[in-house]
Length: 431
Image (cartoon, rainbow, N blue to C red; front, side, top):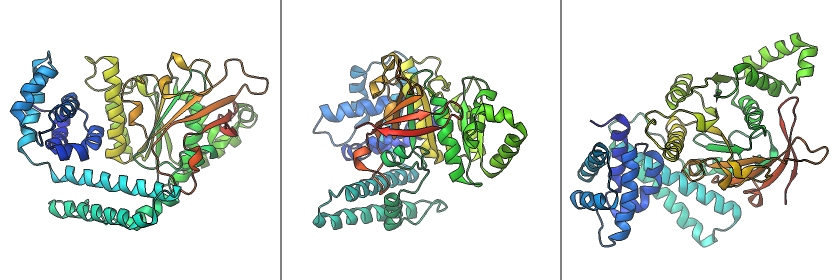
């Protein structure tokens, strides 16, 4: 019997049963499916279409026979489930909701690309109309998807001009660090931000510094939460208070009543919550996020989060599936997700980290991020630079907005962490 994840994934796999469907949709489908059989099917479909250039669609019997020779599975249950999914996917049309979701992704991607190209000035004048016509066509196709469905409650009017304006204006949550506003730009719902850092570098402080700033932009209606699975609640709670109020522990001790009063006012005006559990799991995070209606989520640290049904997985597979879950959480729940992860041994004593320094860099975890930042530091800093932190933009899939500077899209920035308040500030751009 198929579980809910497999049934959901089956609807996406149905879209890949033709060569044209695989070519246009595989990139998006791969980001949505979560079950192991579905990922195996996508990987094998890619090999099959490549090795059978004359085949325009999948014959399930032929494909399954071929797949057994290419990817023998010891677990007969996994093999049977995979082959059953292929048989069902080849014979049943994809759900309208799935078709609509992919249409939304195609339209969003085309809008992002056009916005970025226009800002960079790389769209020839005689090609602008063609690009706009394509966006209008995609918008009409998306509207058709909604009209065909029985449930019209999720049908929304899509206005290309309004969406384009929002992308160019770049509204969203801004960073406390202006260097990041100029390089990666504002944070939007569905964004996944991965922050890798050396041990004892200030990753938690960085997350708190930014979340206390972003929570104020959410106002009284928006809600943010930090899930924490390391030190106790009091330690990170004190960091949140000090960062929000911009006070040191010395100032706090000097006038605790004033600080208590100011903190009561702050938390009455803004919604930043803390969930601390050494045994955090994906189920807990998703349940709390949905029930609490949070739009901004921080997870510290992601590799320590327990993944449901992961007991038999190798670590590489577990991390890859954890990354897929994060993408699913961000997209399906329409939330921005920040992840803190420890860097690997290769990051020791390095200022500027790269993707190779990410723990589990060989998995798909980094590829699920829209933004990836590396935070490094000097092992033997010069006098006066003990608290310098070196932030490198490792990955940046965000479209260019007018606030952003194209030359800084993969910038490197020298910052300083205030040990008293925990806040970060810009020092210089590394040219």
